[in-house]
Image (cartoon, rainbow, N blue to C red; front, side):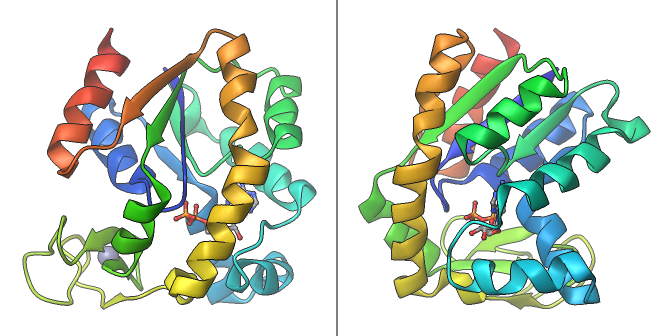
Amino acid sequence: MNIILLGAPGAGKGTQAEVISDRLGIPTISTGNIIREALKTGTEMGLKAKSYMEAGQLVPDEVVIGIIKERLAKDDCQNGFILDGFPRTIPQAEALDKMGIAIDKVIDIEVTDEAIVKRMSGRRVCEKCGASYHMEYKLPQKDGVCDKCAGTLVQRKDDHPDTVKARLEVYHKETEPLKDYYEKQNKLSVVEGQDTVEHTTALILETVEA
Ligand code: ADP
Ligand code: ZN
């Protein structure tokens, strides 16, 4: 199954993607994680993306479309995948359609802006593997340490409140129109983000397994 997770930054796409990925045995592809990785290793693409990302703006379409094309061509995607953070603009969605990639389901996780601003301050990510945690909703077993790889948990620069506001603006302007785009293709399911990760997961699995 080929799945897209939509939703504002901080709606819990990454966390939910990991759960569905385990459940269905298909990989999660997060453009945010791929870009952060490139930034860390200092590739040309990483350098290009840096200023956009740190300002909470979108990286240019042609850059992320190139990333996705390359990633989806790999063997592990042939039985399905979950896209987390792509597409984020109409041209990106159109590029996916043009690649001839059939999307089965688009799950939109709805969370209010107010809740997002609150949530983002508690978010932490693993410096090493990119896994995400939350100081209230998804604690690691050991304080400040990644459960998966023992890497150090840090706060992302772009999770600073001012940058979060910029990211939400970009989301409403550029990404939210995708709901309409996929509604017209009859692929959209809307899930209300719940108070706990598990409750949201249950709703998403219902949708996926329907
Ligand atoms: P979140 O979903 O929490 O906002 P991501 O990790 O998905 O965070 O993305 C972080 C940043 O990476 C975005 O703010 C943007 O700069 C860049 N980025 C990730 N995916 C895309 C995309 N599909 N198009 C453009 N920029 C992207
Ligand atoms: Zn880790």
